[in-house]
Image (cartoon, rainbow, N blue to C red; front, side, top):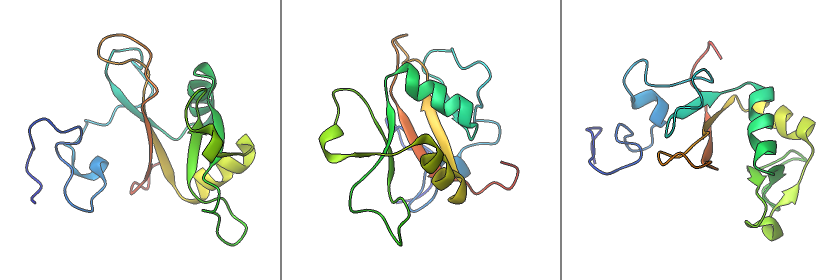
Length: 132
């Protein structure tokens, strides 16, 4: 597989083993401004933005049980009402954000789907940027 644009994929610039944010053309990452544009994917590290986004959807901070290591949180997730809560363990915002910051993660999310409806799309990715 190569790094060329692939038709019909969500991450057309992503190559094998690479963060999609590193393979997209410069300027393609959108931050929280203009966040209401339908279908737009945004990226932030701002705790207030992340928490507001989750709470507007009824989502709570969570982790995958058994993914902890050395007493620290493992896989970070959001527990959305009606989705997978039985397999997730609720955690507090402070612990969730401490792990988020320690791992230098970025939050990729969508406010509205292309059809204008609310979106729950989100992904946590390792940031390779020094200016975050």
